[in-house]
Image (cartoon, rainbow, N blue to C red; front, side, top):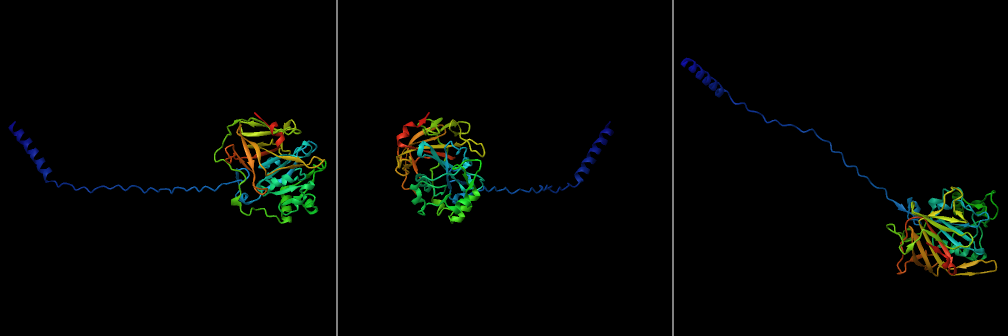
Length: 356
């Protein structure tokens, strides 16, 4: 037993000596190289600049900003004048009385909107007050003839105009539609208008586009708050036009002669973001009922948009300046971006305007 114990002790000591005599290993530090990660450069998105029409404040091509608009005289009687062609492309439309209690339209287009049209019209004759409204837009004015009261101004060099009674312009710009009866069968196209402008040597560009401003457009959409306006009738007695508010689109659909007022080319019903009604003084000039309508003296009116209305006044410094519109506090109003329909009514008929 003593012998066995000694053997165990010896074995233990030998193991200890062996362990103590072994040199301690020196370990090199282990480094792990991280794989290189390629960091993608952040893509820089450069937004293209946007440009907005001076007539509608809707997005347009850059060159449109420097281009003068076009104003075209369009009849509105129910003896072959309707349906009119191409007028749904106009950014602004004036409706103003003429003789016989009828109204006539003046459709104002951005060049971008009319130059591609194959047919616009029919085109009818000038009344002096329409020419005066056209000069407020520095528009090139297209008409087929004129009342005698407009002759001197049209020939004065103070308005660039294309007249169908001018032989050269007639053959170059106007065509007759054999399916319609005269005098409501003269039409133009974007291409023919540009040819007429070139023939007359008119500039298609503003002298200073940066200074041009027809309307004071709202930065954010507004709703006039004086009262509700889901139905608007300016009170013209023959065609009995009215507008109904379409809440789904935020625009006013136009009706006349008991039906939807449609563009005869596209079948599209005319619709507008803004309606402006302005009253003005009017006198009768002769036994044919031709009128003189004041375009600068100012007066009362309404601004209508987004299902609401407010009372306004309007004034104008001269026939070469745009009409300006003001609220009852005397501040210039803002209007919403979009197409605008302007009804000019006689002072004596202003009470016939219906808004509800």
